[in-house]
Image 1 (cartoon, helix red, strand yellow):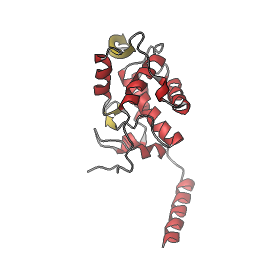
Image 2 (tube, rainbow, N blue to C red):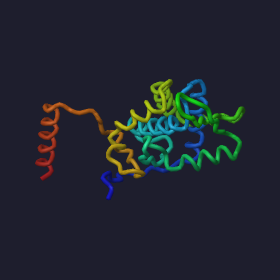
Image 3 (cartoon, helix red, strand yellow):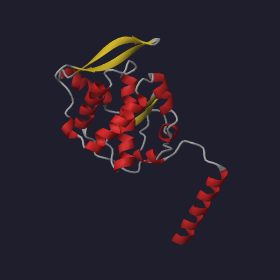
Image 4 (cartoon, one colour):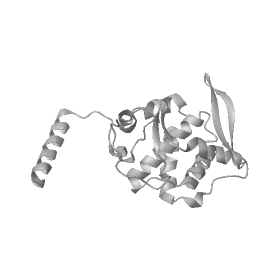
Length: 190
């Protein structure tokens, strides 16, 4: 049984996911720690931050809980379509003590940024800047503090509404105040 209810479904924009994979891969070309794991987390945070800041995710992709953190359900299929179309390739290379699968945009096959609003691209840039230079392990560990990832079962979808949850512990005074406000709202509804 799911512990996280599905509250709202967003339309999935497959083309935007494909172009966002290309855009992120282009923007992270100079990040020596950029690879497939990091791509997943940047996509997750870009969509969830856009939902929180703009009212809707960029791609509408469904993200699921995996052992290394959240990842889009359709990522592998969309990435393979980009590879088959000759727009993206995966390079294997040594990074720290493991083999990294690095998405690389084929020359002349860059992202169609016209699909994105200025605000969406800004949200993506902020996430890229935050994670730039961090290893896949650091990025995964960071994502493991997300309430949506914590609440979801293995391979379960993570609702976008969890973007509003804060994983930081609250002090007793804040908790008591929240309970008091909640009780007042319940009384007012009766």
